[in-house]
Length: 358
Image (cartoon, rainbow, N blue to C red):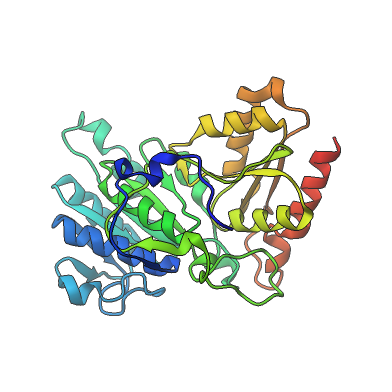
């Protein structure tokens, strides 16, 4: 799973790469490091959310930051997602750079009105007199037996909203670099963190021992400041047989499946859904002639539908087979049947076989 990247900007000093100490980090530690760097660099950066201060967050992503920076920079909030987002919008309008945490993506819905009607519209309705430079962090996705209320993937709700950016990392290195870019961005960003890979990559084989990030190149993270530009996909593996579009946990699952099957696939980790690196997608599909889209969210109106439409519009004459999608089902996330719902090696393998046989 060594990183192969075509977006060289993300690996050069011009992109803000650190030149100091590099150490092994899991995704939790990388996120914590990004927040630490930004709190240190910019006094306007404020962290707020449920249990993020004294306790350090339910996944420990903010551990130690309140003790280091004080209760006016890192503070706990009541259990009110609407209030958390609303306060952050006001902070941003008056010059701060808030980073609110919604404890689970499943609980972001009470804050939708503030996100859609206020944060996403503020720049437009004020003719850029006011902006909302806020980054909403939230763990999302399944694979941890969280059931219906701790496993959802609502990214397509936010990609549909003009004025919001949506970012989903798949490695510790990307998590830190992308999060720093999000915090420095002058528009509101939804930063979804795939909690199934907080502590290690997941290959989709739930009945095998879990892996940690130890030994993976993508877990070698600079301690100092660096950033990865938004809107640039990462080429995980290069290939000619088919293009696979994925993000978050699914990047690791599809890489595991293609390796096991010996398929010469080109896997693109989208990293940023909005803005989308459509140029990288177009170039890859034109080369391979086949496209598989994989995401964990429900199928109907999922982001894969938008990806499919864009590939069809731009690459129609290069396609040698219909576009395939492997997704979650149109049901609430089941607890007892989690691995049937989760797009795993069996369903992904069948989709690959179908694409290559046509």
